[in-house]
Image 1 (tube, rainbow, N blue to C red):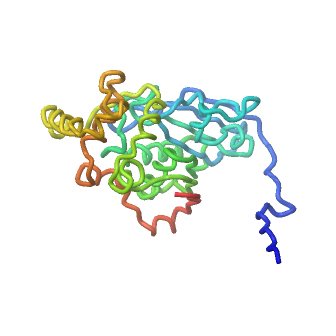
Image 2: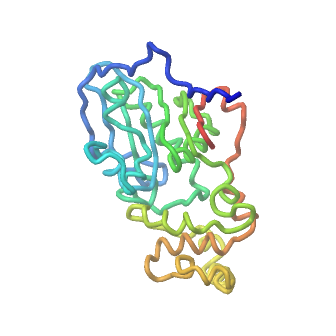
Image 3: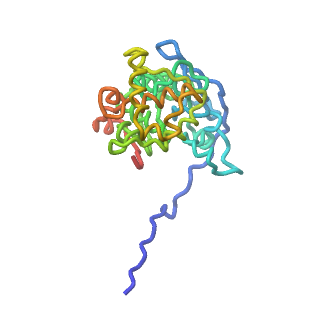
Length: 284
């Protein structure tokens, strides 16, 4: 007797999108000051209303212009695969402000790219507090976005900023050695080799070199490049084409085992934070 094919669950019959209620206004060049003198650059799209509204925030290293680009009539393409912030117009027309900003050392944000380095915690927390304090904001902040956006959302949630009410963080990560760079202890270079080209205006400085000196950094890099399997991959052996991107790659290659260098990249995940800041984590 043939088995009946299970039916995919769909929305309830009375389900519908929330209606558009507002015209929108865009602040195209917003700067958030950081405690060390650097700034985060981005844009905010807001509903046209005199009432304060909650804000949805995102932080990323890609092109801000692509994050805000119209989806139609082109629809999806490879370049649009990096649109991870959500649609600002959709949110703003329904009563939410949407702020999207570049991380340090990318695009117009000043400083050097942290690459999940020791400063990764402070930046999302400062951004959330600053947005919550705007006169057009109700004081409530949510965060939204997939992949890289999700990484930083989880990091920020573990600090429990007072204004952060919820996160939506599909496809995030909490352990970058195991979940991003080295799967089962094996370097997963294919994604990294292509992904690095999408970091916009990258300015990278090795915190390892800053901590241990250029001589120790060069020795670690030389040791990594002596590995025949690494040297056999053109994208990993290249060092001159893009100095900033190469520096980031060399840091990855020079620490092939989990240890002190990768420990700081591991998110100190705490389940109790999820009880105070509701997550919608999707697939992680």
